[in-house]
Image (cartoon, rainbow, N blue to C red; front, side, top):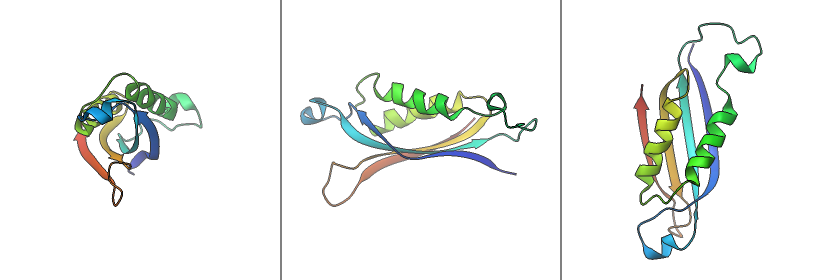
Length: 116
């Protein structure tokens, strides 16, 4: 049985970009992620201690996004991948970011997948 945790349309304010106008203030970045979990070594028993706590991932990404300026979406995605793959039981992570306000006619983003 495959097990996954996902976050969809996680909207964050991030200092990101290489252009001077992007360095004036934070921009909206939309994060999506899928985490593939290792097979369970025990039944979860309806106990948070037996599963990956979503709060740890959510709060970690939020703190990371506010921790510094990122020149590139690629750098932000790499940092989120590091955070996700450091969580117990996560064996693969797919992370994408989008900057919805860069162009008026589309969203632009970056996605990467990494396995432990």
